[in-house]
Length: 324
Image (cartoon, rainbow, N blue to C red; front, side, top):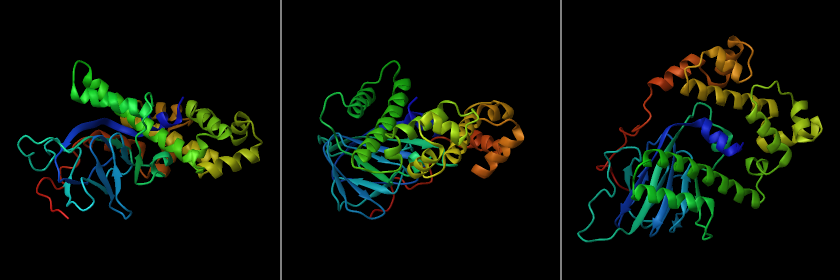
């Protein structure tokens, strides 16, 4: 089991979406109102990423990937000073560029843009501890997983055929997984601590895998320490230092993450959900769930059965938005 992939599977909701954007200069896009995590891949030309919360603009080249964990709060433009128009990735009625291309003109930039909707009821630290926007520079080596997924996704969007409706969401999931894996690998190589180091640390990653693989098991700190090959004290200290919370606190977090997914995606009775995440009674499970997420399991299930998944940006400004 892969921890990053396991987390993504558990917190992503609905179907991820993607669109291909042909942009003609000058152009500037400010992303607003998206409820999930956004991504952009420069296929051709260049772009400038402009964080909304301070920081210098960063130039992007072909192959670069931008991942925004919060889904908004940033902009992309052809030049650092180009005025911006508010757009929404999830609005199917919105066209880019906001003005038509000049006759016979070739686009200055081609991009893949899209969004993942994530369950924000209790964000997993693997996502919540990311910077608001991360940039993954292109890697030239053929066979790099992130580059391979980008190439496949671009091909599917360019030449749709039988199975494209199934292939694109699967490739978007891979794009998210490889983006996070690449970023955390690079952070670990630079000596970062926290989750970047935890994923590479054999004792802590082993304990995480055991909890993820068997969340209903009656784990204790001593049992997990035995799996990790450390003494109880050394394991508890090491786990807490890297993960940011004690082992059993994280176990409860993970159980509630899985429970939220089961409530969101299945019709299992509460008693069955409770059993699957390690609780002996529906009452004990409901109490723990309410304490962790601030509402009852039933209310959580109803909220996800009635809330829309797509086009949640319908109230965001469109083509008539004000510009900087």
